[in-house]
Length: 418
Ligand code: 5FU
Image (cartoon, rainbow, N blue to C red; front, top):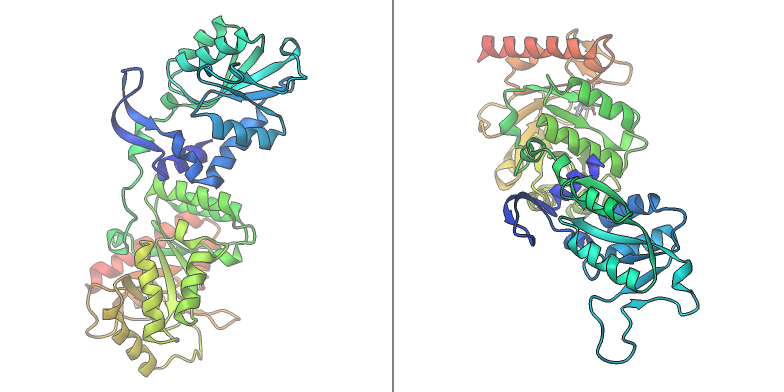
């Protein structure tokens, strides 16, 4: 449920401020569920949750007119239960009945569930119930997305009606609402945290677990979403939750490397939905200036920062000094570029670009697949701003304590060489 609440906040369906409600009461939270239909995936999620709590003895569902009708119709589909219609007021012509239901079904033998979006005082829901009772219908339960406070439950209990709901606004603490940053973090906002952890794990559970277990000490995480075999929408929702809770900055290390139009589509249309969670992406500049500029414009649109790769840590990689120089020359034209992936800070490079260096371990050396490691001290001495560490922390017996050791060494080296 927390995920749904967070998404409602993100989509501005749940707003904070000072609001006067229909009842005249004041509130600092406002839930405008009329806008749910603008977001079909979230809408379906909510309807599915509600459909699951529908009483098995309900014959049909009825939405309180008019606001709850789209929701009721979606629940009807999810639960495979018919939806009947209740008019707000009688028509002066034609069929004047308030209730529209199949004529062959007798009111006396039917139980219905009334669907509502938000219940504050319960007045409009109770009015619908009175109208249905006047038609001889037995209302078994009311199912709402949200009630403002629990006191309203007593009102329905008096009427012998069970009131079910997904959440109450009282449950949403003011603190958790305030925690949401109004804008994404920028790389220069996290320079006090010069360690980037490469969370190159196999599945979503491991990814979320390692991020949460390190989040008190590490603020920047680098992910290869395509090595996380079950990376899906739930992973993204939970990543975003962790981002908000711990104020994290997430980098997707996809290393885009194609012509501009394809890189833009890879950014925007990938099944990993980078634009929904990444604060930065990494790209190669191999396709040339215009291609990278196209990706840069898309990044600007999605408020994602771009990190351009200028050097690699692997042995015998094919990047030479001339290539790196051309990458550096490309940077001023890139408005979203926050930094460069390099092995050292190039002489004369503007301080506006952060240097992020992979291939860092406490013990220098090499793995069996071309990776070369330098120590945090060595890398910082060469002018790096952020050390990228993966296995050095991930494969340690105590990753949290090891991350603290890396952080101390990096900060100590920064004091020494800056
Ligand atoms: F651009 C680069 C590079 O030159 N070397 C790298 O190692 C990126 N990396 C990434 O840093 C690589 O894709 C891994 O995600 C990470 C290094 O992980 P390690 O476990 O510390 O070797």
